[in-house]
Length: 73
Image (cartoon, rainbow, N blue to C red):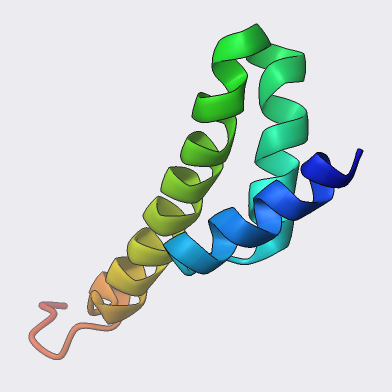
């Protein structure tokens, strides 16, 4: 049981991620993907988080097309 708690903490320090993300990946990964989920679970959560952060940053930087200055009437 202690390994389940310690491993996410150590993994999060090495990867600079929040321990809860790693812990959730270690729990949900094997439940959904079986043994491969031990590796793929945390990886998929981290990749999803990074994708969403980058996507939201990209969308917020894009100018709003509805309020364009050179809009023809």
